[in-house]
Length: 366
Image (cartoon, rainbow, N blue to C red):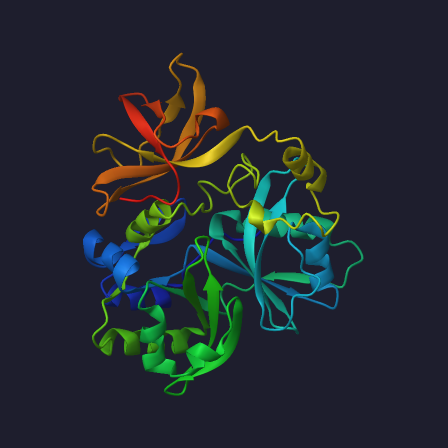
């Protein structure tokens, strides 16, 4: 059994010293925030934000067959993934449902999979199931590295303060070893779901601490903030980014989650390939991920079912947040395809509330 843990006590103490406020959810420590929601969301959308990605896990694959193995069992082509390249892929069940979504980083002598902490156990068990006679060794490497994400329109300029031209030497969807005042770490430049750049930093614990401290103390003219899960959740919903475990789980398939771009239809067989191909060929997708706008303030942890005019259940709300930009509660949810249209109204209902909500295309626009 793989242990569900995300933050060692030393690293957690470090972030608490920087003002982090935490909450334990399903045995996982979430950093909720550091300052106000408005400030943190503003940095995400207008400045530069740094998030400790302790709700992600790192899985390591070693062995000469590792890349071929990933190519064989996941949705995206891994055959020609070069050293220091990065690519996302999906592990799906025989029914085409999502087991986990991973970002694959090729270090040549080993491969790292960055995946959600809630899908880590399922993903590792799934991988182990199909290692039959392959030279592949699997392990949880979350303790070896600390993963940081840097987001926002000022990110590249901000990073150049610390690593100079090295930030420009990293190509899109690749990574390199860089140095900031003698502190070594891996810097990855990624293109997100909406075509915007973001950066990942993989660093050993003491180097991560030195780097973060340097950034906090020397942010210069930039609108820089450490951010927690509350602000990051707003950002993901506003941008229509499906995440583990709410949108990315084995209730849904890649078509429904709108991550079909992570499926290579030319690569040949993988687990779940027949079902996903059939849904595509015969246009049989039943539901879609949509944005939803609520007319009144609700608690972000409330659960809602979606109903049509005839009171039939047609969907579910998966994630919700209050958006300072839109000044309303917004949500992601899965909705029957015929109703997943901009401006369509459906009923959101739980044990205590019933209200009409409006469907929004993703990403949200004010």
